[in-house]
Image: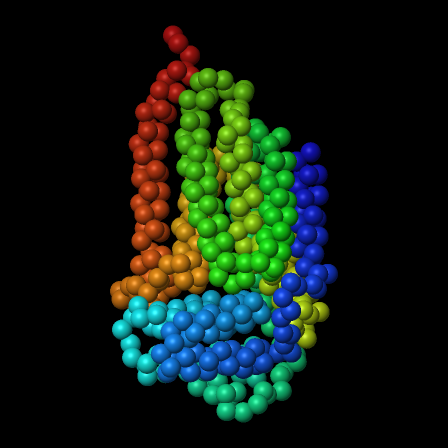
Length: 437
């Protein structure tokens, strides 16, 4: 039953993700662009409006213009995701840091005069234009930022259609694989645990949690598209991340605890597996739901923006199909190999994996709230010297690092505490399980 349900839900996941391909209606009509150079030039219009407002001393208007450039163009048109996959995640981190620094400066949170603020806006515009030329196949990925001035000084350059098609394919493929793999890791850890603990009948609930996550993602995508817009989207994603952190931390701790009670359970009854109570069953289902919905809505909106505003839509679809096949292969490989792992090492590995995911999600959640302006994000850590690993949610800022260190300390405390208790329980279990003379 578990296998059949899993296969059916996997197909439903792919069908549901294909839904945005057939949706073309929006509450608010957005401009369609033929290439990323056009997006960059419209962002330049926003930047010029911000510069004009800074000179006039109108901080709120300047701040709004910067938000329009980011939320209305850089994010909603898929610019951010394309840069992340085709250039680097660190490049996105750099651009977002420039946006953040400029907005803090405009609001007076950082001591900078108007000349420096204007200079920073111009530098940001140059960097965005350079990235647009890279995405359109005009420049190489290692081109200097100054190359972006070519677009600012003249008109758009004819795009390299072949290069753009390849970038569309790899952006679509890479993003689906990147986000989908995280969800699969979490869900498969839970499913394998259920199978190995003799609770295979509960797999159906986890698969339904995954399906509910996809449906919830589609609904959230509609809400974001019609109502929330940019800032609201970042806030929603950030708080969803934090909820996922809380649930996954509980699940990882619980799994580790179960793995260390084997000897004691053997004494109670070797033939009967420990059942899972309703509370923990619901938590496991919620974990699967949050693992999918965490980035599901943003992923759907990315595909919608790609297919409604890009000339290489066919290659985006091909990338989606290739990514779906890759995820399906990964799913089945994990499904039929992880169950063969020894029980104790599997539980320990799974717990550590979920702890790492908690740390990653915490950093990414803070990052989302930073982009929305809810958290400052201006406290850089000099000793990191700009070092960051966006894929793991690690950034060179105190706002993300402090809560991550707190989770790390809590995780280590849990592991050490369980290891110390293990010796006592193991000895007691073996003693009681051994035949009396």
